[in-house]
Image 1 (tube, rainbow, N blue to C red):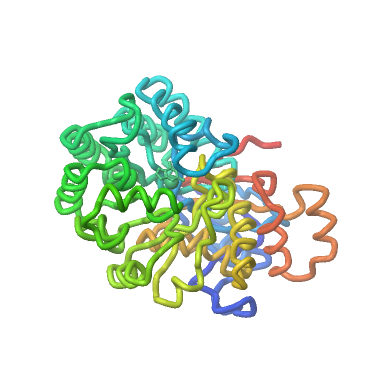
Image 2 (tube, rainbow, N blue to C red):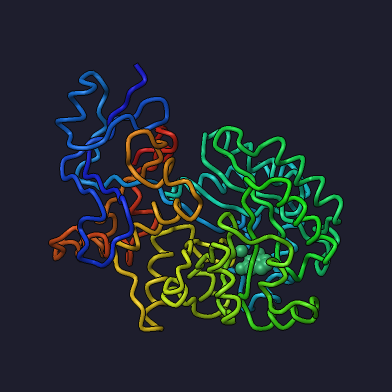
Length: 432
Ligand code: GUN
Ligand code: ZN
């Protein structure tokens, strides 16, 4: 018998909540259970109903904690695990001074494999069960991450970074090698198990026009792959990009004119956008990705979530490790709340938890597989304890509603609030 049952309070979203009062957007079951069979959710709902379906299944009792779909991180950098918390600079100096040297070490396949293990462990410890990751420019770094994710049966979307200029030789590819390595990785990994490939030109500064042509060819040849890159994060970056592509109408046009936009395209940051760029994002169904801890750490600027949403654009949310300072999607929500406050916008708790689960799943076109507790979906589940620290427990003594509890998790939670993480039904955190 391979069945396992988890018991606890269930929370799962079936659409985006319209406001903090919109209780119809989610299912909340006070005494609930999830039946896991062969890595999938076979049933979920009231404990009495689920137990009737599998009376012999062993029960793991997580009461009084909340069981929710595992978190989805829509943008982060695997070879930046040792770059987090590097002092004192903004984007371009930070890349040159810290990030590029660290990524050079991923030419060593053993280093890449070792770091891939740390990276996936950290994700799981923080409740993240799906990640959309940049690797280094070395093919072996992507192989290492795909192998580690596959060993854990973890859903991963990743790609070898394409970059052929304006960086140290140790991390440069060429238009041809970038194309060939990406192509080989797509053949090897895309659609195998829980892995998908993301064609990954780093950003316009580090890709020559010849390399953009190659990225364009890959995108045309593999329309079912994702595309990930960076857009309009920092003023100096935008000015330099305009010098390098003098014929482009604006930053986004560089990607647009190469056929790189569409519903499978994720654009990290997208902070300083011009009206034409916003219109093009809306027309193409591309997805900006909000990276709050990174945008604050690198002093990049304030993401206009409400402005983009008002144009019908659907945004992802992500940690952006290692420009970001926390692996925790809860901490990401915390800083995201504050960035929106500075613009007189609000990130209410229901939308916040929708966003890091089903919301990001919808951005990825994967809501039929991840992001909810619905039967038939993959059993990626996080167990949340809002009383995990003394400070949070004290605050929780005055929390009377689910919404208040969620807001405590949103503002005060981190990996300590993650009591357990299940990936494809398998517990990832050691007990204790
Ligand atoms: N733009 C291009 N590369 C990077 C990166 O590694 N991190 C961030 N935050 N922005 C980028
Ligand atoms: Zn990034």
